Image (cartoon, rainbow, N blue to C red):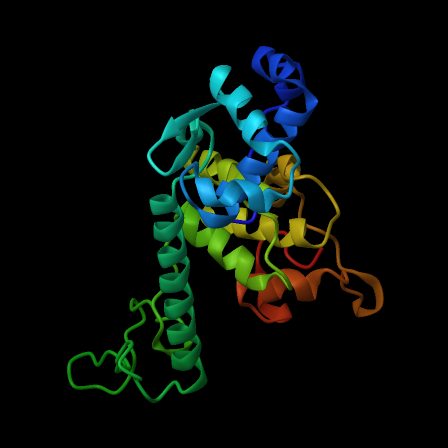
Length: 259
């Protein structure tokens, strides 16, 4: 992984103060190594001189003496690594999940490009015929374009759609905060499409993830706008419509759309 966690009170930790500046720096370097190698906190003996720190063996002994590292066969183990960091197994499962979501997204895109061909994803659906007539049943709900199934209304699905619409993947901390708010909004029974519209507006603003509930509230409770003069429409319409998979006329047909 690219990051490791350091708790905010580390500089004042009793053990860190006891080992001194040089050993404390070895402790930080060791954390970075374990995160990069996804070693679950293990540091092999052969790695210690590669850190390029003078007196590294003495520093390591200080870390062991004060409980920051422990001696294990073949090297050292960072104490309580898994209490504060992601395990290598969790990281592998997360990557596998990301790969599967990408596979499904590409499959949906292929289905949308060639609506008349199933591409082994979802077969085309024939129009409903009632009592031998050729008219389509008025009560039938139309499938999404391209024969793709509608996206599930789960936290992971909604955040996944948001990530796909971003030019670059947002930082994990931002996604985690957005996911927390989306999960809470869904638990309250908020319409998932209102949450999607709130996220679409979030994409156009330089604001913190904590603002998302307010944006969703605005989507839910804004008053119907009066007609804009000379056919003017908000410059954010295109971004919101793209996120929701709508064209702008369809967006303006929604309650509160095109504002």
